[in-house]
Each structure stands twice: as C-alpha cells, then as structure tokens.
Image 1 (cartoon, rainbow, N blue to C red):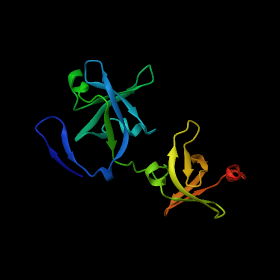
Image 2 (tube, helix red, strand yellow):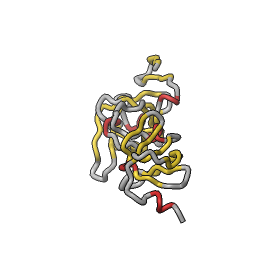
Image 3 (spheres, helix red, strand yellow):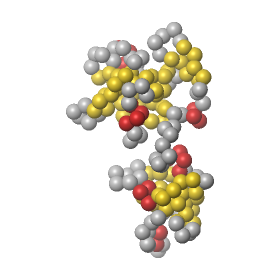
Length: 174
C-alpha cells in the first residue's frame, strides 16, 4: 500500500480497490466532538478497535475509540475527525478496509465462485452468492440450493467442503 501524507490531518491513500473490502458506512455525526455513527456490515469488532485503519473515499481514518450507544448503534471517534463540522462531511460515506487475517473465518469474497462438495465427495455446484440470515448466512448455489454456513467444514483450494444433514439437498428436488 502506498501512502503520501497530505497537508491536512488525514492521510491520502492510493490503493487498489481489489485490495479492500467494504466493511460498513459512516452514517452521521454524533455530538460535538467528532464522533460518528458507524454501521458495520462485518461482525468483527476488530474493524473499530483503537488503532484500526479504515478508508473513507481517499482518506485513511484511524480509530481512536469506539463504543456501543444505548440504542445499540456503534459510535466511533476517528483521529482525523476533530469536531461535528468535520464529522458531517463524512455522512453516509462507504468504509473500506483490508482483509483481516483469520484462518478460521469465512469471508464472502472467498466463497463466491467456489465449488461446494459434501464430505463424502458429492458435488452440489458452485456458490454464486451469500445471503445474510440471522441464524447463519446461507450459501446460494447455482442449482438454487441454500446451504447454511454453519455446515461449512473447510474452505481451501477452490473447494468448500460441507457436512450437511441427510436430506438437505433432497429438499430442492420435486
């Protein structure tokens, strides 16, 4: 990642969009001290931990602090946003970040396009999307089948191995 320091207190970034993932949005200013409401699409609090870097537009923002407000929303203070006036300029900005290195995590961008195979070797098609679901995200296959992500055993070498209950794929048959 190449960076050049600008004359302002924010850092300009030159990054490939391929290197960054969409992780949430700054929604609006909160209070007078530069805090903002952040809506994460990631379930990882690492994204808003002190010291974390997120990209809004072409600026790198560094998290000073974050907390969950009484209404359940995430309130974040970025070092580069000193006051409400500055915070208002970031309203509804997309936040992007680098992938987090967690070998046990399933990342949507790594699931799309991969073959789905049961533990016994039975192939069921290719993952075409991941659907958010409160109980467990669902892998949507090109066959139309839906597989809860909690049945994923491994994701390596272009293959997602699943251990599904007997009959799950039979539900798709007429």
